[in-house]
Length: 76
Image (cartoon, rainbow, N blue to C red; front, top):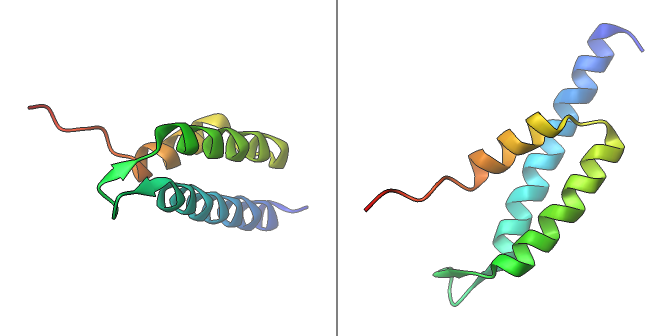
């Protein structure tokens, strides 16, 4: 696999996992999107992490995608 194909493959993986994380968040929302079932979200993210590891996506990239999808709460 040449460098260009490898870059395209990595970009496709990132897009795929970004979508999977977003979908997991949406599926974990409850009460008309005012609450989050954290247990359900955690379980879904664990499955996504295992799949990403199998696909060769680095843990740092996956962590960044999760951080982008789930921003830290604002300080009061």
